[in-house]
View 1 (cartoon, rainbow, N blue to C red):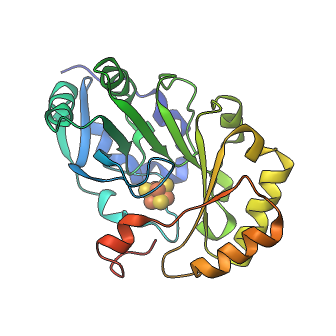
View 2: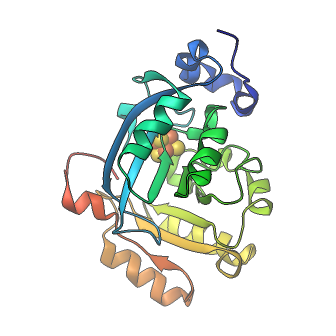
View 3: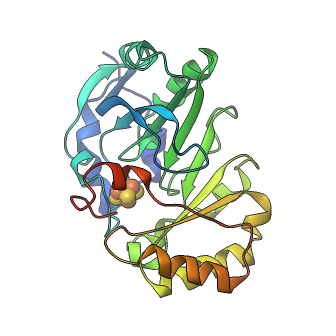
Length: 242
Ligand code: SF4
């Protein structure tokens, strides 16, 4: 099998290349998938809706509060056609591509296009460290802007803001008052709440929702949307970090 196009891997800094080593054997037309299942969307403006989750394996970031470290080192090589067929087999109109970091794998881009062509509403969850400009414009991008306590603030790719659509969503995960102040400042400086849907949520075992709500209300940022990660309340409320 020929080599997969590796363009997205160009974004991986040298010190993080060892984290993506598993992708070396993934060929063209293939994806390394951690899990693929039907559940209820826990976040974003789509929260509460049944959704198929396609979780890719491997991430080049290491957020201190990551809730999916299980996806870092374990995945099954599947053909893109098999991933598409399995996702469509659920018959659910909403499909989310998440990770890990989906944009590390070149075949994620045509997979999302094929899902859109099949009439699905497609969501992409991405860390914000990788170029989103080649994502099919029909896809709803839900992009993190990493706050300081994540330890990955330096990976924020600010140029992505110019590639997002008004229908895309920005997510800030807040672990401390310092994170909130950083997020509020970024939102104001770049008028993010006028350009996109801005979502704030708290690290599940850190900041209390009532604290974050207080900070939000006192800020006057009335377009910013507080969200609770619904799945954390339904399943495994204490098992994972976020
Ligand atoms: S970007 Fe997402 S998957 Fe990667 S370490 Fe951060 S929270 Fe975990």
